[in-house]
Length: 322
Image (cartoon, rainbow, N blue to C red):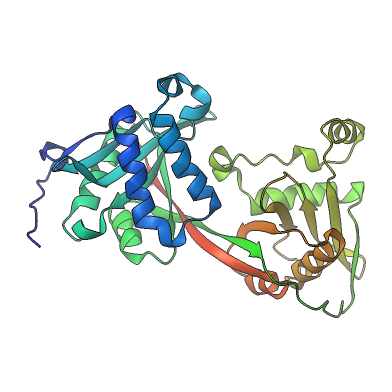
């Protein structure tokens, strides 16, 4: 396949241009689906559908709520009327910071290894910095070494790795080996809150929209949960009367219901296994999803009958030079 020379300032190339939201979103959605269909989960499928729907609704562009989750800015590589490369930018504002999320970086399979992906990505990063970005973020699957190398070459550095797990066949109940599973008690909340902050750091909360205030004990939270008809359940794992971990179930009526694991740096990893097995036994034949930092608890989560869906590497780059 004939290669295309990419000039040093890629945005001067005639095939590279800014994203036109209403005109380009259908083709961008098609490109994303083509490139990532083999590992696209329910959340990704929903996102692609929303992109197609948004392209047919001009009022969407004026909606701040939707603008926070869909790309309004970005760059595409168009050739013979077809979009074959894309890099989107989504703007977030948090704590007086202007944060750009680099997303939907994709190149058509028939046109890879020609510099198109690098060109649209470099141009998007430069655009964000020229428009006052304080920082740039992205996430990439850990099994995509070419993309990781590209982002590293462009100045992104790894911040964390997070694995999304899905419940599978339930395991046989393991021997507790000195662990005790009890309902979460109010006195455990300070430790639980601290562990949640560690496991789900504020640096990523701007994107993931974590809000754990509803897990706190107290009359007002109890009244709120009663009002919204949420049957919140929480359990704690103790060993020798020492708190090891806490698991929360927050049903949302979705296909998979979320579980939240709060675990300290000095906690026994196997506490996660006992909590997850206990929760699955109490909650019956539901399907669950769990996101947690990748690493030392992986085997304990796997032992509870969960399978990894994906591990994302979160990467960060500096914004505009002050």
